[in-house]
Image (spheres, rainbow, N blue to C red):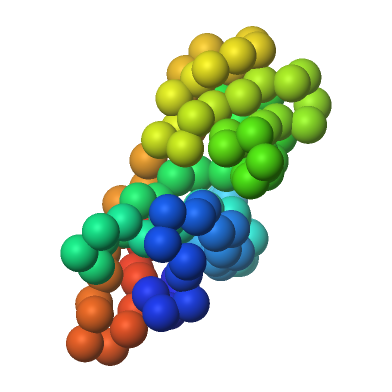
Amino acid sequence: AARFSDLTPDVPTPVVIAVTVEDGWHRGRQPRVVFLTATGAGGVRALSATCTHLGCRVAWNQTADRFECPCHKGAYDRAGRVVSGPPPAPLPPVAARVDLAADEIHVEV
């Protein structure tokens, strides 16, 4: 999904990944956005960028120190927990692993 060295510690970074989807006879790839945040000791937190209210894409607001949904003013803290607005649930975590030797972050969606 990304190189670990490209992340700024404690700053959520949006990354576009391609996900294989199947629908009946059709198979294709769709883009998905996840936020990767480098944590201490070579760790990473990965969160879906899809708002749990109606599926809009959230953005990181550095000034407010939170994720914000432009559609209905939902907001999440840096851990993905709801802090205001209509979202019924936190941002879903995404399974991620860091390979420091290869400077790679792998996500599973």
